[in-house]
Image 1 (cartoon, helix red, strand yellow):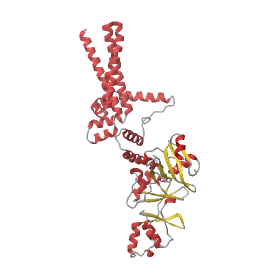
Image 2: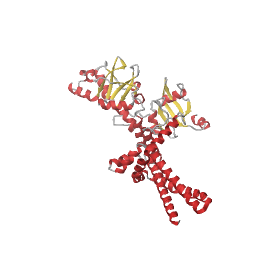
Image 3: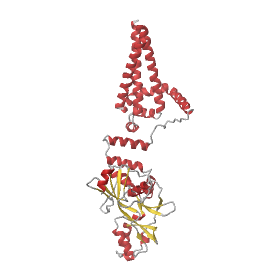
Length: 431
């Protein structure tokens, strides 16, 4: 009798130990980083390869682990109840329930899952052979159970696929970096750069282009001396050339090509034919994504393109530098003109040129102003107010107070932005 009790007790302890592995493996395998596994696998870790293979079919893996876990838990509880009925009679059911609940919660749930969560990669590598054996034993049954679940949910109009609850790669990366930034593991500049890279497929060239009203260009019909002087005095390397109308772009001149041409005519600018120096302009639609435009720049080994709308009218120009700045932030050199147009005031407000892009302002000041409906800060104010505000008019939205400081015809040229505060305070401040 005593021997049977000891054997049964040993089996129960063994089943609880198995439950420990089932629960820990489930948690570790679902929390493991695929990127970390890939790195370990590239380094020659065979167990990392096993784990990577298993998690590609996570639904099958988790189903197999759940089947095994429930099997050992139910068997352990049944054996404990039978043992305690023999020892204590009908009261043994109560004792068995209490004891198994405590043992399973502590040793088969909290302990293994806490351990697995503390270091999911190391735990997953440790239990990899065990997990592979479980999938081998219960994988087919798990697939059948998953198929049955999908069928039953389908009767209620719910569609399940392996990717239903998975974020896109971009969303997963962005979310991970944002969390690490809040926890202090990633600097703001690094977060912004990665965010800019991930945004390239969402933004269009119209979001970053230099508008035609701000384009520096030259007239092909002007005297050669004038054209040469304008190009060489410009802070830009590449200058569009127009004829008859500044929207009729007929070429793009590179300063280096102009300098070579000047050298060939012994620096006599009157002998320069600007159209012979200019290269053929490249026109791109304003709806082209920055990702596609960047790839096109690299493929064509070009640095500048003229942006046109759906009617073929010139809207502006975009450069390779404009796209790169979306990733790394503002790039300045010794020839750049200060075009930031953002000035921090002592009272905490910010004076901003109306042409400043919303994305640049958000990046510089860590704001979250929306840029879906407007590209510039002036465009945002006009969109939100549905009017062209007068000077000294003030508006509050998105947690900011916008005060129009200057307006040129129908353009807002300068704004003051401060945090939104109580209206009483605003009245005394604005006056």
